[in-house]
Amino acid sequence: MKYCILVFMMLLSISFIQAQCEPEEGLPLDKVGLYPLPFGVIPVEEGGTGITDTAFIGELFDFRFTIVFPDTFLDPATNNITIGDTLRVIPDSTMFVFDNEIVGFPEGLSLEVNPDSPFLGSSEAPAGCMRLFGTPTENVVPGDYLIFFGAQSCIDNPTFTGCTFVLIPSLFTGIVGEYRLTIADKTSPTLDVLNSQQNLSVVPNPLTSHSQLSFDTEGMSGDYTLRIVDLSGRLIQSETIRIQPGQHVTELDATDWESGMYIFQLSGREGQLSGKLMVH
Image 1 (cartoon, rainbow, N blue to C red):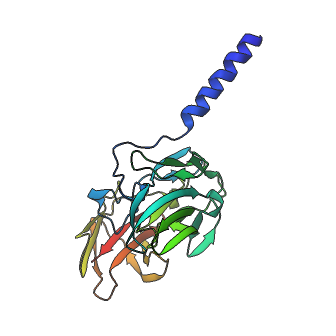
Image 2 (image 1 turned 90 degrees about the horizontal axis):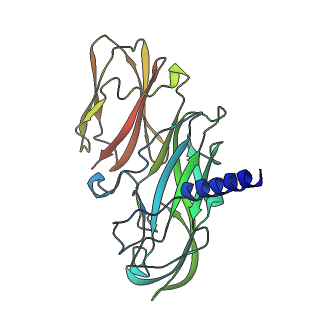
Image 3 (image 1 turned 30 degrees about the vertical axis):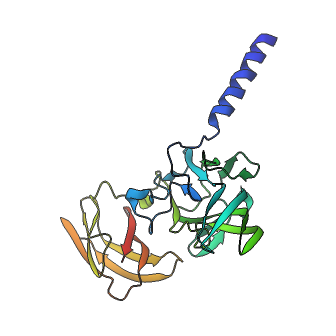
């Protein structure tokens, strides 16, 4: 019996160790970075994909980030060569923004940082990693959550020496764009993500002034509401679209929009279609 308990404890320990995140290898090590890089400013081909997975209510979610913090790098805030002392991600200071309001971690999700002690600057290997993981509960409101990771960095350069609190992504860190986590509920047809079923496309994207949002309408009916918001959650456009059989095409006029990234969501009783627009 004691042997069985020992084996069980060993297997439990091995499972816990395997569950911890490991940094991704082969990444650029010459500047501070959180990989994958945020979406919207950094080109996708250069790693600016943001969070690519959807978290479903009642299902395990596990998304991993790699942290790079070199011992020397060009500080984007001062444009000086900077000595990296330590960097520490603070899970309790990570902000989730939903419908333009700051909220806590969606119930069931948490952030694991490995190692949990401060990262020492290194130009030879990634500093560490993070896991955003857990099982969103039925109390979580489905939708898009904008995430800002709280961190404390200690650096030394000709204009500044010491420690300061920073948010990632931000202009201060030079890691710009957005991390947006989509939480969906597969059990509710009104909240299904319909993108793949409806062959959703936006062409061109990125755009300079005009674009076309098109999708198949099979399985959709009635009125759908199109909402477009910027990264701060400010509503840019809202209109009602009457669904007709076949393929629907909506013209998007971004002539008066500022350059940047926007989120669109088309919602109706059968579900929602959503995506991102980049305006040059």
